[in-house]
Length: 170
Image 1 (spheres, one colour):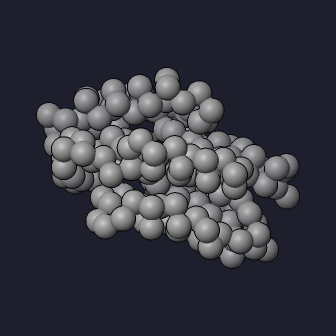
Image 2: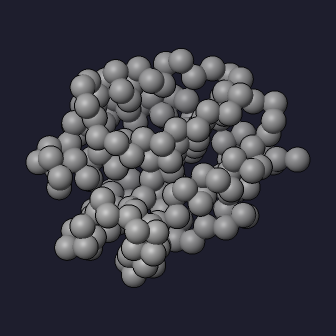
């Protein structure tokens, strides 16, 4: 069961990469696409950990954000991350047990700002943009097991699908 988690700041290219992945995913899997850019509302274990328990061999899961966004945006906008500590560790363990390909997009700050603002995104306030960008950079530094990507293209998407499948895509 291939699983790819794509994380990054607003404007980093997550949705673009996920769309590229969708275009080349093998058709012999049930395609499951998640967009998890919303805060935890109730129970982080239910919303993250238990969500992964239904993933089966015939699923190919791609998530446009999963838990790192809550880890970074939560403290900024709600004063707390609902996935920090034991929940973060549990989510990471589950993703590792599924052999998930964990990707963090790290384009330069100005590129991210330009992309986000050209789309009219207003969730991330301008005065917070650099702070959040630095938090993603720090997360990447602290998590060398994640794949770090500065720029993505069709070849990047193909490489990630190959990695998730454990070999080359036809």
